View (cartoon, rainbow, N blue to C red):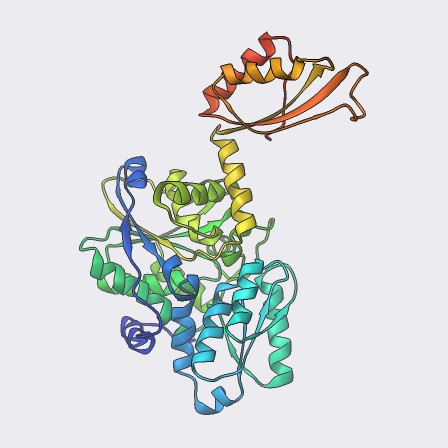
Length: 405
């Protein structure tokens, strides 16, 4: 199995120059204060196609033979590699076919098609799409472009590390997401060559922590517990090449929960005006949840992508606000008499909560004659405010059935 070196990463930077852009390294004061470090975010969500994946895809395409290009290319992807391959192929006049999970966000599917690629949907996770891509490759003879288990792809992703070291003089810790392992492998190879003392931490979704399970088993292992909102790293079986590199160069792998990822997406949106997809937010989630134990260090977290479906973003924000105590949804029963609703609304106004939505009905199965059921959604300050609201409402004789969780 071919290895990847710093020299390969430097060559990749030349190959992708003019296509992939150098992304910003932004200091995040809120995360710095939270973790007692200086935290910087590498904004690959601002990369072309909205993800780091274009780096590896374009480097791989640049190293194809003319015969391979003539056969066209095929790839499997949860969405971001798909866009990178599609754009790279379009710029080189190559036919591209992409197999994607049927669960891939609609925005990613639409974007991939917009670059001129043919999209085939199959299965629930990346591994299902990969199986379909292999099937199509055998039928068509197209050149398969692996999203992570390929030296050229890994070298392309490693160019992120070159940029980090250019923009930050003293780098102590770099966090990167892990799905199949391509991005962290490239970053780790380059970073450790530039500074052997830098600590590399990989972050996975707890639901699909396949690389962490593989490290614990001492060999490539398939692992799947449940779906994840971090669809970009939803890989049940990591690569053997990436596994070898990670074993050698990555110091630690941590996992984050779905709730922690959702909170990180909300935090980045609100505090730093950064739109991150699930996979792009896992490094922030690791820092927020205290899984980076070091203090007084220069820490870089890679925001690997920002291709999140707007409907998903809305749901995540809504749930995140609930968890932070900034939304309260509850049900109560009022007497079905003139003025009772006004009395109830005035009571809510006294609590300084803002009514976002209210619905009353006499038609529910459990609604007794002479009563009406009310569902209400309030904008609140925090969890203490919610406790005060519930207490005041109950003190005035209303039953409160909280529906948040």
